[in-house]
Image (cartoon, rainbow, N blue to C red; front, side, top):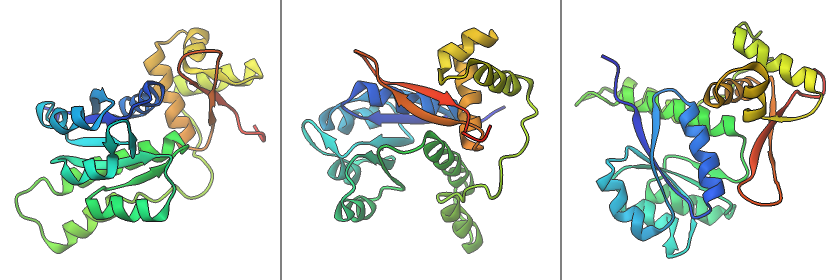
Length: 223
């Protein structure tokens, strides 16, 4: 029987950014988003009621400070914020945050850290652990970037994704890629995220006239 997915709570008052973070989380195997909450008050009880394993917390919330919330929460936490002040970083880590991301950050940075967090949880799943396992678990929280050029893409769907972007000659959203190659949007999103993580694609935000920003993908200049 496969393990239950790790339950992630997103605490972010900008629904557009919350949805972007949720897209990244759901693209990583073994994770599910249980809710997005926009206030400290809601998160204080919500993380317990929802049995969250991990909370992704912004610092700037309408009714309080996310770092203080991290200090109170009973689940694991990572901070995702535009606050780049060094003292805030130190305060978040002192409060118990397992990671600190300064917005904007590449989606691959969060997806890589989530994969490392899953390994951290597996390594510390037993009731007692030795020194080597603790060291391995702590190292898993800081996954090193893959060295060298991206490996060749052999998946037929990934190949179709790359061909669609190459043929279009312009950046495309996950929905546009899905429509072009005839797959579901979640499938296209999963492959696009993997290709960004491998360095085969670039991602940036596309801002329209209204509503949430959308992720768009393009080939690097030398492709």
